[in-house]
Length: 360
Image 1 (cartoon, one colour):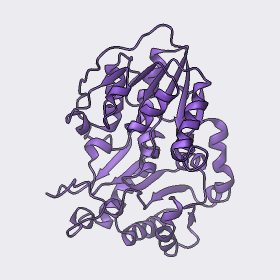
Image 2 (cartoon, rainbow, N blue to C red):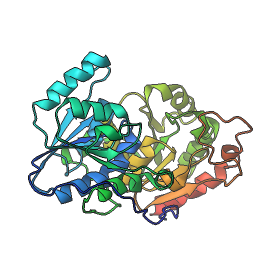
Image 3 (tube, one colour):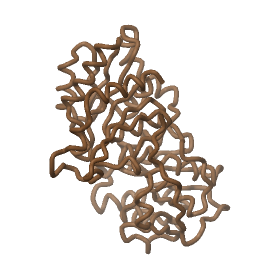
C-alpha cells in the first residue's frame, strides 16, 4: 500500500563539501513541528553515517525534542525554550552563550529561518551549513541553493538533498522510528484494560494545526468511528492537542465506552507509544500522520488542501485518500470556496480503507 507520490530524487549542489576529518562535535538545528521533525530523520541518519564517531547534538523546541530523542543517531538533546529562558533577543543571546560552551565544530541547520544561522554565528561555531533560505546565505560557510524545484519534492528528500549536496553519505530515505523499550512501555497503563476487552486498537487524529482546510469534517470522523466499533471489537483512541479537544469531545460522545479521548492529555512520548500499538491510524495531513507512518502503523491519510507529493507519510503501509479537484492543492489554511476537496471524500470510502489497513 505504499503511496505513489514520491518523485525521483532531485540533485542540488552546495558551494563546497564539508570536511570529513576533524569533526568531533556537531550541532543539528531541528525543525519546529512534529511532522517536519519526523521527515528530517533520514537526513540526521546521513549525518551520523558520514561522521560515525562525532557527538551529534540536536537543538529543538520542547514539543519536538522527543522525536529526536528516539533516534539512535542522536547523542544529546538541547532544548530551545523560546517561550521561556530563550525568549526574545536577550534569550537568543543567552542560548548562543550556552551553545558556545559545547565547542561545536559544525552546525547543520535543518530549520530554514535566519534566526538559526544568527544563533549559530553568535555561538562561535566555525562551520555553519544549510539552505540559503530567508536571506541567511551570508551567515553560512557552506550553503546550498534552494531553488524553486527543490521546494516541489517530498520534504524527506528536501532535507536529504541538502545534506547530500554538502557531501554527506545517504543512509536511505525510508528510515523508521524504533522506539526505546521505556518509551513503548508508556502505553501499558493506558491500554491494560482496553487490550483485554478489545482486540483491535484504532488511532484517530481529527485535528491539524495548519488550519481547517486540512480537516475532514468531524461528523464524518465520528461516523467512521461508529462504523468501526459496530464491525469490530475495537477501541478508538482520539489523539490531538488541547486545541483539538472540542473536536475529540464531539466524536467521543458518539462512541461512549469504546474510546480513549486523549487529546491534550499525553506527552509526545506517550503519543508515540500509543500509536505504535494501533492496528490502524486515521488522520488528516498532520504531524501525527507522520509519526504513525514512521512507526510503520497502517495509515489512512486524508488529504485536501495540501499536497501528498511533498508531505505524504513515511513507511510502507499508507493509504492516501484524496480527490483530485482543480483547486487542490491550494495550501490555504481556510477554504475560500466550497471545500470540495474534503466534502467529496465519503464515509464509506474511509471505512473501506480502514478495513484494508486492519488486514495488513
